Image 1 (cartoon, one colour):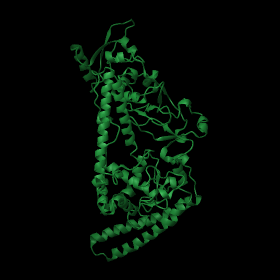
Image 2 (image 1 turned 60 degrees about the vertical axis):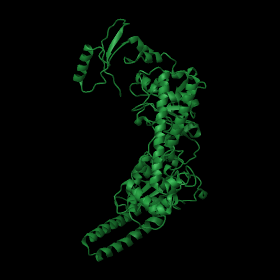
Image 3 (image 1 turned 180 degrees about the vertical axis):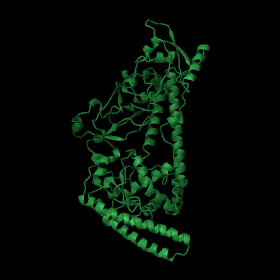
Image 4 (image 1 turned 30 degrees about the horizontal axis):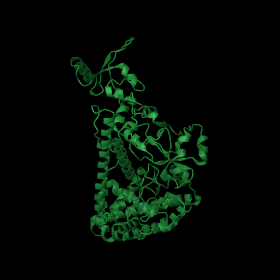
Length: 589
């Protein structure tokens, strides 16, 4: 929260003269420091933190804030027309129970009749994005309307295209153009043009430093409610020269396109197309990639930086134009800090881990190397979508800390196949070495390092990326990792757990018993003390895993016998508890 400290005196008489104000909020260090600054201002009236203005000027700004630091040009700007004369802002739905009526899009089977995309504010992001939610409006919202605490506002404006923003923020404002139709709520209000004013022109202004500056007077507490936004000064685009207007529209169009493409390069977006590290494995940059994932990342890093630099340059150019239009060249500069540019640059560890997540999606058929975007998110399964890399027949993938199977049940067998298909068989090992180096897991070799990541960290990263609403669920027998396995929520059926016991848990138990027998023999035959201790440690670990797996089996059997049906419309949180039926068979979220 931004607070201004001032000294003031009150007189119960009209005063048309100038008031004198000292801005002490710029000085930290307690009362002694501020006392010295006051004395300095008294001795030297020309210092830059002493202001003089007529209090009548305050009435020119809606709400009459004591904006003593505002310049004459600022007061003049507020004499113009306001945004609400050109764009009508509306607050949206109060569902009465967000947990019931709102879901992240990836929790649902898609398409899903009666569920609609929903704007709910969100983190700082300009131009495009934060398109995370769907709202339950089945039967014309009958269930929501029946909720005692619901507030069904502005229905004629729901499911529309417009400009949205986060009404409550811990930082600077950020506005987004939806481009497609959305429902919306009070934390993510929307505005709609009254006549034929350009959304591009408006969002260019709203995301400029000019708007940010005006909001320091209208909303110094960082609360960007509809009322404050609607009172922003607004220059009608008709008074802007044709050349300037065209330049604004071109820059905004480019910036929106850049922001949208960047948002959609991450799988958390509903319009995710293809993992960016696989973009050039079969196009005109294929030779530059040369079968090496490290080269693919280098290309992606350059592209992401170019995109970042271009968006930043566009924002700075828009700032220059709007600063000039509002005559605020003495008050503002156009420069944008890197932290305020809301597209992401490359991050080696994050992006390599996201490729591992994409691989898991391929194994379960959520994605396909042959089909852009979502290949399967519920509904009818189509095997024709999967040619280059065929998903697992069963909706299960074991996360063993060592190799126990030489087929699709072993995650590293599948991962080697994935790397061979995408980057070439001859480059599998060097690509695994690179991945192991990037993810930084200590192990005897690259395969073990990657395996260790999947066992120890993948689910943690997944539930974080998916806002604690994971779509890949992790079966977990306990601390010894006797059984860890992933399943894909959208492929679940009532026979899932029975299948897991029969085709995975029982065979794994046999493999543990075989491994224990071998280790016992190796321990007996080993004469080197150091090696013998290592084998004994391994033997103890596998023995504990076998014990844990046997203890886990009756718990899974109990749940399997229930043949529990899941309704994805209820969301991950409800179904996660429902499947466990009062037991603990899944990793905690």
